[in-house]
Image 1 (cartoon, rainbow, N blue to C red):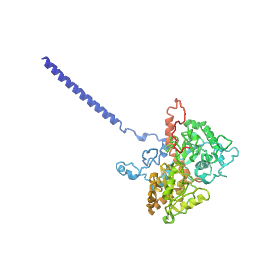
Image 2: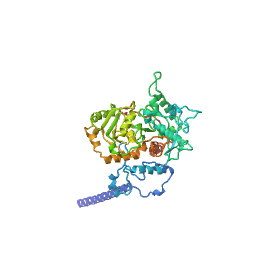
Image 3: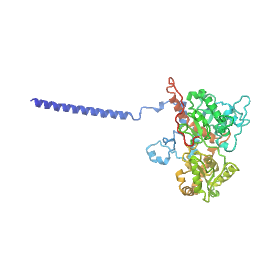
Image 4: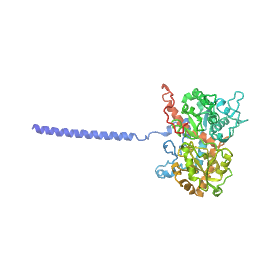
Length: 512
């Protein structure tokens, strides 16, 4: 009897435990179901109730090219790329909001739409002493004035190769012109404001490239060059300004287009946005495509304004004239010279600006179908922009090159890109170029004609020229700067900050 009761009790206990386990399992599964469901996108937000302030409108308008119309893929590495419409055809059939951002003739339409809807960039420019800008051009200040009267006389910039890095000169002139009462009525991408609190960006008018070109050689009686002393003065000036202290320089814009300009100060001013020719001599901690802007060189070859798309009127197939023996990434020039020197319709020769070098290069580029742009001491060179001005289709052999306005322009429409490793294969490059037919060359020529104005520096600046394009490129960086500043200010009410600068920075091999 006792055994029967014990058995009955055991069965009851097992049933109870089984039921309890089943209930707990069901509750566990249901809880996970509700958790997973709750992580989905909420449907209760009425976007019509979101604030429509001028700050949001400004950010929307200054995002990546027409963000509301174009979907851009996340950046790969530190390069942002445009989504090709052909790669999205299947997604478009499933998603009604996908946009076509294939860069063909629509590049010009895209830029035109941006100009119609753009918000003018408001720039606060420091009144630096003339020794930092026009004083370097031997301009003498009169009556305590910091700036020249550009209505009567504009100080001349030195010619020759100095001009190729003169970007800060043209930007400064454009800001000064924006204040003139009789300023040209053409649409402007940037205007000067005198209250830094109203500004989108703080511009530092230091002619750093000119300072390097003129004053980088040491005087026998001085311990430091004038170029280095000027940089030290600039750093002391900036870090003492309330505008710099407010953001620690994050909303400042500094031009250092010559690869060796601002060589000493860049480590102290690294939080600022730089306008550069490339990143070849900058560690990625100091300068990168996310933070900074790449600007074109000012071409020294005369524009081929009377040219026509006559394929047969250009007898030279492939043209290069310049320094052949270079260090670092430029070794490829020497290798290509030996691969191409015996080709009959290829001009590959040493050249410089001396002894009518620019005149000879102008004639050579204007009479060539394709012009080589090969990496030298740095990834970029003025040769690319000379080729564009000549309407000679550029052949770019520079794996690390960064290009101006590439977030809104597809350079493959008017350039030919070749990897260095491929270019060094015997007969690869010349066969590639020979296989580009007349029709394709004409298409690229026509595209060059459409975009060539984007690389023209002039005063007064005109709509769609290099000055306006650079300001627009800066404007597209403003939302990211505001995001960083707003995050930086989260704990500003009590946080103790220390600015220790940059430490343990990896430097590229050619960093001087």
